[in-house]
Length: 609
Image 1 (cartoon, helix red, strand yellow):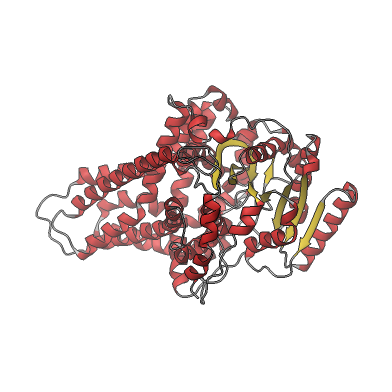
Image 2 (cartoon, rainbow, N blue to C red):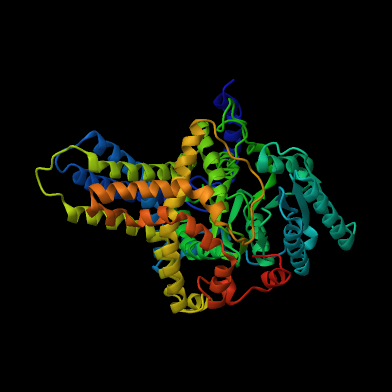
């Protein structure tokens, strides 16, 4: 039986679940929004994206057509078509989000009306808090969970929460430390503290399999679960707010919080999360406006309704051999679309709260994590045709695939553009330099739109400016992060392209613990991992210098990033730079200016950042 046949066998069950939704006709399953309204929004966004895409492609085709089309021109146009859609959607999400935040529309009412009235009231649901571990620092992870439990208890709602440490650790010394630390916590908390530690000896199904094991053992004892990674931390008000929203809407299946980075001593993480912090707010607001009930799940810092998740979100095992078979690495988006297929809404709450994660401390760790996501997203090819999915859900799966195909197409575009100097076509008319410059400026500006919109959002609000330490500090941080992003982009895109080629030949990646702390990266280590970027950048730069020196200015941003990849990695991993940035407040996030009490207690104990 094929994969689709297996999934189709359960389709009547999903259809019954959808029909059982108590919402009135014309509303989403939770009765939150009009389906017609969401359809109009989606058609508007589709129209804006298609029109923008068509305009850019037409401009580029006209540019390439100077002197006639060649095979190389057609390949360049194809690479442009694949690499551009992500930039366009990011632009429109940012524009829509900024309009919602500062236009005449009430953003809360338009985007997340389900959160209204959920600020207070007792917790009545039984909630399981799950922290998944795999060869992580147990002292650091458990300190976060202990802090969360203590603070939830201080609100008077602790009796409704049970706490689970779900370990897939394979290293004996770390496993022994986990067990010892947990036993000490249990002795300290008392036998009735509702604390559970479980370690699997095999990592079957990866993280999704770890959660599935919990569901089979203890899922029936709880109504909701809060999923946490080893680097997750949520303040008590954030947890209670998420749970109250879920209580208010029984047909809300997954509620994803907007996750932000913790303060970090690592220069790489500090600069990266500064841009993500203000960039994500307008982008997520815009995306949530039209995604509505088909929202994302990011795998952690989310509250999930256990019964439908257990019944309907069991991931298939992909048949065959090779890196794209077996258990699914990037489980979260598929679980989200299966939850929506079952008749439950999946929403993201697009407002900042005390919902934190840690970002990778250096370039090597950042790319390792990204490659795991890349391999997982490429497995989605097999799932695009799953029966019964909503059109929006199918689009989300395709879009997750395109995210990484776009990076490959961008590198292919760079290669093809360099080879263009050897093209034998004869130009019978002057090259339209103005048109080329206009197209370059448009696409580059659109790529910056999410972070630019987030920056404008903060600058337009006096209270937000103060949270970032003032307009001057904010703008200085934005300039630093802009340079950082220009250098980082081509390095990561080239690494993804190499990895995608490796997938074709059976190369795979393992899932293991992530590095969390700032460490000095040696030149030897950096060169060993980044020499392909250096060689590629030097080769491309040499060809352009010899055969088309006038084109170097166009390629300069990418060339600097590629040729400078090794020193960039070493410098941004250096703890000395991280401390220097902290002392001067460069790329400071609001928690650096005024640390929340719960985070301050955690940081003071040396367990964060």
